Image 1 (spheres, helix red, strand yellow):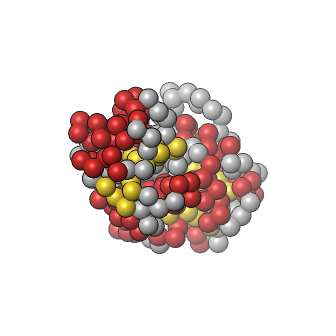
Image 2 (cartoon, rainbow, N blue to C red):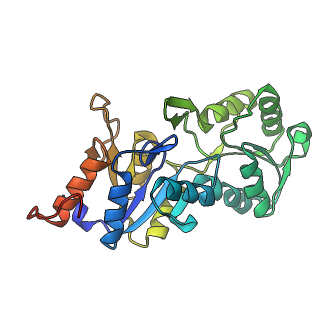
Length: 272
């Protein structure tokens, strides 16, 4: 709780932390609202590879957590810029949603369809609900022929309300195996996401907290970035592979601990 008193900004993962599928998780809206009332900075740091910050912000708002696009840091948005910074504006084969192609085109890249894979100078893999053998063949052949290989993230699973769907990482591994090449990864736990989140929060990394349910991405990456890490672990029987600074069983518990840190006398309440 002493450490919580020093935190001036909070970065929340989305999938599995703020929401699961189409529903907010318990305590999410209340905690975010309380932090904002206290004048603390809040951003949402998502490994999303289907949609960018504008779509995610609208979904947060619809579910009861008002948010603007500038408050969302999405690996989806950072990927097009990463390709641009490394190799310039190029023809890109995008394995993902139509939104991914639009994001790439917005910064100057030229999306090419799978049947024209020989023209691609880069391959970008996101979460693609239409992924099939033809797309796998086109992407892996392009990479094997020398196209730069980028992955939005390496998350093997995508949390949904009734369990999980295969994530971006599952598709990336298929391409990587066939192409015999490893990708440049943009999303968590790699540094670019955390650097962007801390910059949006406007405080030093040591005064910023990363809150998430994934040890491999949220906690590992947050610790490497020098942030205070809070692991949301609703299942007590799941061991901590990497030691977070704080582990809670859900956002309501984090809310209670934050209130205690802010008001050691205990006069504050969750409904304050």
